[in-house]
Length: 160
Ligand code: SF4
Image (cartoon, rainbow, N blue to C red):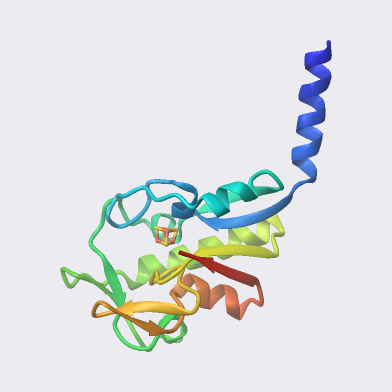
């Protein structure tokens, strides 16, 4: 009986936790282009207080794991969303459609959960908030998903 009550209490408690959408790779999911698993202990600690919902825009956009690394050809995610730039992987494949689809699906998931807070992985051509990588160098700009979420006035943070 006591066990049942504890279980019920736990369920009630988890229901009340504020939800945060998190780039899935920051939570240790194997979704990165290189198939590596990374962990961010700071983010994992947040699970004590918040309900963390993992989302990987590139996988949602239909890309496999592992996959060739990709970069935004010019400008940043905003430029891609305007239709003025492409995303090419290092084999020369145009994966723009996948990145845009992943960004739109991520936005729908966020809206479905009515989430206000989003934590993104830095420097990614999808998730990077303040910087992306071009030709091996860090440059200012947002990834495609981050750009779409910014355009929808969501509160974004980024972690390494
Ligand atoms: S940075 Fe974003 S798109 Fe890239 S693996 Fe992590 S969650 Fe997926």
